[in-house]
Image (cartoon, rainbow, N blue to C red; front, side):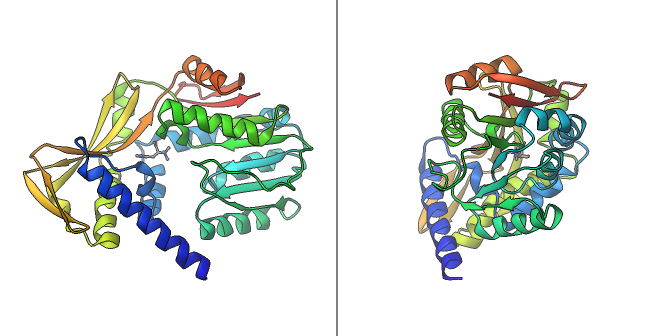
Length: 316
Ligand code: AVJ
Protein backbone atom coordinates (compact mmCIF):
# COMPACT_ATOMS: atom_id res chain seq x y z
CA UNK A 1 0.00 0.00 0.00
CA UNK A 2 2.80 2.38 0.98
CA UNK A 3 4.54 1.47 -2.26
CA UNK A 4 1.43 2.46 -4.24
CA UNK A 5 1.17 5.83 -2.46
CA UNK A 6 4.88 6.51 -3.14
CA UNK A 7 4.43 5.55 -6.79
CA UNK A 8 1.47 7.91 -7.23
CA UNK A 9 3.33 10.72 -5.49
CA UNK A 10 6.42 10.21 -7.68
CA UNK A 11 4.24 10.11 -10.81
CA UNK A 12 2.56 13.36 -9.84
CA UNK A 13 5.91 15.10 -9.37
CA UNK A 14 7.15 13.80 -12.71
CA UNK A 15 3.90 15.03 -14.32
CA UNK A 16 4.35 18.45 -12.68
CA UNK A 17 7.92 18.73 -13.99
CA UNK A 18 6.83 17.77 -17.54
CA UNK A 19 3.86 20.18 -17.49
CA UNK A 20 6.00 23.10 -16.31
CA UNK A 21 8.78 22.35 -18.82
CA UNK A 22 6.34 21.67 -21.67
CA UNK A 23 4.19 24.76 -21.15
CA UNK A 24 7.07 27.20 -20.67
CA UNK A 25 8.79 26.05 -23.88
CA UNK A 26 8.55 28.20 -27.03
CA UNK A 27 6.51 25.49 -28.73
CA UNK A 28 4.26 24.10 -26.05
CA UNK A 29 4.14 20.32 -25.66
CA UNK A 30 2.96 17.71 -23.18
CA UNK A 31 4.33 14.16 -23.44
CA UNK A 32 1.71 11.65 -24.60
CA UNK A 33 2.50 9.20 -21.79
CA UNK A 34 0.46 11.40 -19.42
CA UNK A 35 -2.71 10.73 -21.43
CA UNK A 36 -3.15 7.43 -19.57
CA UNK A 37 -4.44 8.14 -16.07
CA UNK A 38 -7.54 6.14 -15.00
CA UNK A 39 -9.89 8.41 -16.95
CA UNK A 40 -7.56 8.54 -19.98
CA UNK A 41 -7.15 4.76 -20.04
CA UNK A 42 -10.94 4.34 -19.92
CA UNK A 43 -11.33 6.84 -22.79
CA UNK A 44 -8.65 5.02 -24.80
CA UNK A 45 -10.62 1.77 -24.30
CA UNK A 46 -13.64 3.61 -25.72
CA UNK A 47 -11.56 4.84 -28.68
CA UNK A 48 -10.64 1.25 -29.57
CA UNK A 49 -14.37 0.52 -30.05
CA UNK A 50 -15.05 3.51 -32.35
CA UNK A 51 -15.96 2.84 -35.98
CA UNK A 52 -13.25 5.28 -37.17
CA UNK A 53 -10.44 3.82 -35.03
CA UNK A 54 -9.29 0.90 -37.19
CA UNK A 55 -5.91 -0.04 -35.53
CA UNK A 56 -7.10 -2.17 -32.61
CA UNK A 57 -9.68 -4.21 -34.47
CA UNK A 58 -7.39 -4.61 -37.49
CA UNK A 59 -4.43 -5.81 -35.42
CA UNK A 60 -6.67 -8.15 -33.42
CA UNK A 61 -8.00 -9.67 -36.65
CA UNK A 62 -4.44 -10.14 -37.96
CA UNK A 63 -3.46 -11.89 -34.73
CA UNK A 64 -6.52 -14.17 -34.88
CA UNK A 65 -5.98 -15.03 -38.54
CA UNK A 66 -2.26 -15.80 -38.24
CA UNK A 67 -1.94 -16.93 -34.63
CA UNK A 68 -0.76 -20.42 -35.56
CA UNK A 69 1.98 -19.08 -37.86
CA UNK A 70 3.05 -16.59 -35.24
CA UNK A 71 3.25 -19.35 -32.65
CA UNK A 72 5.37 -21.44 -35.03
CA UNK A 73 7.62 -18.42 -35.54
CA UNK A 74 7.98 -18.02 -31.75
CA UNK A 75 8.56 -21.73 -31.16
CA UNK A 76 5.94 -23.83 -29.36
CA UNK A 77 7.59 -23.23 -26.00
CA UNK A 78 8.63 -19.67 -25.42
CA UNK A 79 9.26 -17.11 -22.74
CA UNK A 80 6.90 -14.31 -23.76
CA UNK A 81 7.87 -10.83 -22.57
CA UNK A 82 5.18 -8.21 -23.08
CA UNK A 83 5.95 -4.49 -22.84
CA UNK A 84 2.89 -2.82 -21.34
CA UNK A 85 0.43 -5.18 -19.69
CA UNK A 86 -2.75 -3.72 -21.12
CA UNK A 87 -3.15 -5.63 -24.37
CA UNK A 88 -5.65 -8.12 -22.94
CA UNK A 89 -7.31 -9.97 -25.78
CA UNK A 90 -4.25 -9.70 -28.07
CA UNK A 91 -2.07 -11.36 -25.46
CA UNK A 92 -4.64 -14.08 -25.00
CA UNK A 93 -4.69 -14.83 -28.73
CA UNK A 94 -0.92 -15.30 -28.84
CA UNK A 95 -0.67 -17.20 -25.56
CA UNK A 96 -3.55 -19.43 -26.66
CA UNK A 97 -1.73 -20.30 -29.88
CA UNK A 98 1.57 -21.13 -28.17
CA UNK A 99 1.23 -24.80 -27.27
CA UNK A 100 3.04 -24.70 -23.98
CA UNK A 101 4.56 -21.34 -23.27
CA UNK A 102 7.10 -21.71 -20.50
CA UNK A 103 6.63 -18.33 -18.97
CA UNK A 104 4.73 -15.06 -19.45
CA UNK A 105 6.49 -11.87 -18.30
CA UNK A 106 4.26 -8.77 -18.43
CA UNK A 107 6.19 -5.52 -17.86
CA UNK A 108 4.31 -2.41 -16.76
CA UNK A 109 5.00 0.69 -14.70
CA UNK A 110 1.56 0.59 -13.04
CA UNK A 111 1.65 -2.14 -10.39
CA UNK A 112 -2.15 -2.39 -10.00
CA UNK A 113 -2.62 -2.72 -13.75
CA UNK A 114 -0.02 -5.46 -13.79
CA UNK A 115 -1.72 -7.43 -11.02
CA UNK A 116 -5.09 -7.24 -12.85
CA UNK A 117 -3.53 -8.40 -16.12
CA UNK A 118 -1.63 -11.25 -14.42
CA UNK A 119 -4.77 -12.45 -12.64
CA UNK A 120 -6.76 -12.44 -15.86
CA UNK A 121 -4.10 -14.45 -17.69
CA UNK A 122 -3.79 -16.85 -14.77
CA UNK A 123 -7.53 -17.61 -14.82
CA UNK A 124 -7.52 -18.19 -18.56
CA UNK A 125 -4.21 -20.13 -18.74
CA UNK A 126 -3.69 -21.80 -15.35
CA UNK A 127 -0.79 -23.84 -16.78
CA UNK A 128 1.33 -20.79 -17.65
CA UNK A 129 3.80 -19.47 -15.12
CA UNK A 130 3.61 -15.66 -14.81
CA UNK A 131 6.43 -13.38 -13.66
CA UNK A 132 5.20 -9.75 -13.62
CA UNK A 133 7.92 -7.10 -13.70
CA UNK A 134 7.24 -3.55 -12.46
CA UNK A 135 9.31 -1.25 -14.64
CA UNK A 136 9.00 1.80 -16.88
CA UNK A 137 9.58 0.13 -20.22
CA UNK A 138 10.20 3.48 -21.92
CA UNK A 139 13.42 3.77 -19.90
CA UNK A 140 16.35 1.39 -19.63
CA UNK A 141 15.70 -1.54 -17.29
CA UNK A 142 16.99 -5.06 -16.69
CA UNK A 143 14.87 -8.18 -16.60
CA UNK A 144 15.20 -10.27 -13.42
CA UNK A 145 18.53 -12.14 -13.57
CA UNK A 146 16.92 -15.52 -12.86
CA UNK A 147 14.61 -15.56 -15.91
CA UNK A 148 15.41 -18.65 -17.99
CA UNK A 149 17.32 -18.11 -21.26
CA UNK A 150 15.79 -21.30 -22.62
CA UNK A 151 13.41 -21.82 -24.31
CA UNK A 152 14.07 -18.73 -26.46
CA UNK A 153 12.54 -15.47 -25.43
CA UNK A 154 10.03 -13.55 -27.52
CA UNK A 155 9.34 -9.84 -27.03
CA UNK A 156 5.71 -8.84 -27.71
CA UNK A 157 4.87 -5.18 -28.35
CA UNK A 158 1.43 -4.86 -29.97
CA UNK A 159 -0.76 -1.78 -30.35
CA UNK A 160 1.57 0.31 -32.55
CA UNK A 161 2.67 2.07 -29.38
CA UNK A 162 6.10 2.14 -31.02
CA UNK A 163 4.59 4.81 -33.30
CA UNK A 164 4.43 7.24 -30.38
CA UNK A 165 8.24 7.29 -30.19
CA UNK A 166 10.51 9.48 -32.29
CA UNK A 167 12.67 7.22 -34.49
CA UNK A 168 15.83 7.48 -32.32
CA UNK A 169 13.77 6.50 -29.26
CA UNK A 170 12.06 3.71 -31.18
CA UNK A 171 15.53 2.41 -32.18
CA UNK A 172 16.63 2.56 -28.54
CA UNK A 173 13.53 0.65 -27.54
CA UNK A 174 14.15 -2.03 -30.19
CA UNK A 175 17.78 -2.35 -29.01
CA UNK A 176 16.62 -2.85 -25.45
CA UNK A 177 14.21 -5.56 -26.66
CA UNK A 178 17.14 -7.22 -28.42
CA UNK A 179 19.21 -7.08 -25.24
CA UNK A 180 16.31 -8.59 -23.28
CA UNK A 181 15.71 -11.57 -25.59
CA UNK A 182 19.31 -12.22 -26.65
CA UNK A 183 20.70 -13.14 -30.08
CA UNK A 184 18.43 -16.22 -30.45
CA UNK A 185 15.37 -14.30 -29.38
CA UNK A 186 12.53 -12.93 -31.49
CA UNK A 187 10.01 -10.12 -31.38
CA UNK A 188 6.44 -9.58 -32.54
CA UNK A 189 5.65 -5.89 -33.01
CA UNK A 190 2.45 -4.13 -34.15
CA UNK A 191 3.07 -1.27 -36.58
CA UNK A 192 0.43 1.04 -38.01
CA UNK A 193 0.98 1.77 -41.70
CA UNK A 194 0.82 4.89 -43.87
CA UNK A 195 -2.51 5.21 -45.60
CA UNK A 196 -5.05 7.53 -47.14
CA UNK A 197 -5.66 10.59 -44.97
CA UNK A 198 -9.39 10.03 -45.44
CA UNK A 199 -8.99 6.93 -43.28
CA UNK A 200 -6.18 8.13 -41.05
CA UNK A 201 -7.41 11.49 -39.81
CA UNK A 202 -10.94 10.44 -38.72
CA UNK A 203 -9.29 7.71 -36.62
CA UNK A 204 -7.79 10.55 -34.56
CA UNK A 205 -10.77 12.90 -34.75
CA UNK A 206 -13.91 10.80 -34.41
CA UNK A 207 -17.45 12.07 -34.88
CA UNK A 208 -18.49 11.16 -31.32
CA UNK A 209 -15.71 13.31 -29.86
CA UNK A 210 -14.13 10.57 -27.76
CA UNK A 211 -10.60 11.34 -29.00
CA UNK A 212 -11.22 15.02 -28.25
CA UNK A 213 -12.21 14.07 -24.69
CA UNK A 214 -9.12 11.84 -24.45
CA UNK A 215 -6.85 14.71 -25.51
CA UNK A 216 -8.60 17.33 -23.33
CA UNK A 217 -8.30 14.99 -20.35
CA UNK A 218 -4.64 16.01 -20.19
CA UNK A 219 -5.75 19.51 -19.18
CA UNK A 220 -8.34 18.09 -16.76
CA UNK A 221 -5.58 15.97 -15.27
CA UNK A 222 -3.44 19.08 -14.77
CA UNK A 223 -6.45 20.75 -13.07
CA UNK A 224 -7.09 17.67 -10.89
CA UNK A 225 -3.54 16.81 -9.92
CA UNK A 226 -1.71 20.12 -10.08
CA UNK A 227 -4.50 22.58 -9.29
CA UNK A 228 -4.18 24.26 -12.69
CA UNK A 229 -7.16 26.32 -13.91
CA UNK A 230 -7.54 25.31 -17.56
CA UNK A 231 -10.96 26.22 -18.96
CA UNK A 232 -11.65 23.15 -21.11
CA UNK A 233 -14.14 25.03 -23.28
CA UNK A 234 -11.31 27.37 -24.31
CA UNK A 235 -9.30 24.58 -26.01
CA UNK A 236 -10.14 22.49 -29.07
CA UNK A 237 -8.84 19.07 -30.09
CA UNK A 238 -7.06 18.89 -33.44
CA UNK A 239 -5.54 15.97 -35.38
CA UNK A 240 -3.01 17.00 -38.09
CA UNK A 241 -0.97 15.02 -40.57
CA UNK A 242 2.74 15.90 -40.60
CA UNK A 243 4.14 14.47 -43.83
CA UNK A 244 7.80 15.16 -42.96
CA UNK A 245 7.44 13.06 -39.80
CA UNK A 246 4.90 10.68 -41.34
CA UNK A 247 2.86 11.18 -38.20
CA UNK A 248 -0.59 12.14 -37.04
CA UNK A 249 -0.08 14.85 -34.44
CA UNK A 250 -2.60 15.63 -31.73
CA UNK A 251 -2.82 19.23 -30.57
CA UNK A 252 -4.90 21.25 -28.14
CA UNK A 253 -5.64 24.59 -29.79
CA UNK A 254 -6.26 27.68 -27.68
CA UNK A 255 -9.56 29.12 -28.95
CA UNK A 256 -8.64 32.61 -27.76
CA UNK A 257 -5.84 34.58 -26.15
CA UNK A 258 -5.82 33.57 -22.50
CA UNK A 259 -3.70 33.13 -19.40
CA UNK A 260 -3.80 29.91 -17.38
CA UNK A 261 -2.44 29.42 -13.84
CA UNK A 262 -0.28 26.31 -13.62
CA UNK A 263 1.78 25.42 -10.56
CA UNK A 264 1.97 29.03 -9.38
CA UNK A 265 2.91 30.37 -12.82
CA UNK A 266 0.95 32.33 -15.42
CA UNK A 267 1.06 30.58 -18.78
CA UNK A 268 0.10 32.82 -21.71
CA UNK A 269 -1.63 31.46 -24.83
CA UNK A 270 -2.17 33.39 -28.05
CA UNK A 271 -5.36 32.65 -29.99
CA UNK A 272 -4.66 29.60 -32.18
CA UNK A 273 -1.51 28.63 -30.29
CA UNK A 274 -1.33 24.89 -29.61
CA UNK A 275 -0.05 22.36 -27.12
CA UNK A 276 1.37 19.40 -29.07
CA UNK A 277 0.31 16.29 -27.14
CA UNK A 278 1.09 13.23 -29.30
CA UNK A 279 2.80 11.91 -32.40
CA UNK A 280 1.45 8.71 -33.87
CA UNK A 281 3.94 7.73 -36.57
CA UNK A 282 2.88 5.67 -39.53
CA UNK A 283 5.46 3.47 -41.24
CA UNK A 284 5.71 1.43 -44.38
CA UNK A 285 7.18 -2.03 -43.95
CA UNK A 286 10.46 -1.04 -45.67
CA UNK A 287 10.90 2.03 -43.52
CA UNK A 288 10.26 0.06 -40.36
CA UNK A 289 12.69 -2.64 -41.56
CA UNK A 290 15.45 -0.06 -41.89
CA UNK A 291 14.73 1.23 -38.39
CA UNK A 292 14.73 -2.33 -37.00
CA UNK A 293 18.05 -3.04 -38.72
CA UNK A 294 19.73 -0.16 -36.95
CA UNK A 295 18.72 -1.91 -33.72
CA UNK A 296 20.03 -5.36 -34.62
CA UNK A 297 16.82 -6.89 -35.96
CA UNK A 298 15.61 -7.99 -39.35
CA UNK A 299 11.99 -8.37 -40.39
CA UNK A 300 11.59 -12.13 -40.79
CA UNK A 301 7.79 -12.28 -41.20
CA UNK A 302 5.06 -9.79 -42.16
CA UNK A 303 1.42 -10.34 -41.36
CA UNK A 304 -0.92 -7.71 -42.83
CA UNK A 305 -4.68 -7.28 -43.12
CA UNK A 306 -6.15 -7.43 -46.65
CA UNK A 307 -6.41 -3.60 -46.84
CA UNK A 308 -2.76 -3.24 -45.72
CA UNK A 309 -3.71 -0.88 -42.94
CA UNK A 310 -1.68 -2.50 -40.21
CA UNK A 311 1.32 -4.83 -39.95
CA UNK A 312 2.29 -7.35 -37.31
CA UNK A 313 5.99 -7.97 -37.89
CA UNK A 314 8.05 -10.95 -36.78
CA UNK A 315 11.58 -9.76 -36.02
CA UNK A 316 14.58 -12.06 -35.67
C1 AVJ B 1 -2.24 3.54 -28.15
C2 AVJ B 1 -0.51 4.84 -28.97
C3 AVJ B 1 -1.48 3.22 -30.36
O1 AVJ B 1 -1.36 6.30 -31.45
O2 AVJ B 1 -3.12 5.28 -32.19
C4 AVJ B 1 -5.38 6.85 -30.00
C5 AVJ B 1 -3.07 6.32 -28.98
N1 AVJ B 1 -4.08 8.50 -29.65
N2 AVJ B 1 -6.01 7.97 -30.39
C6 AVJ B 1 -2.39 5.63 -31.28
C7 AVJ B 1 -4.17 7.20 -29.54
C8 AVJ B 1 -5.22 8.98 -30.17
C9 AVJ B 1 -2.78 5.16 -29.87
N3 AVJ B 1 -1.75 4.21 -29.33
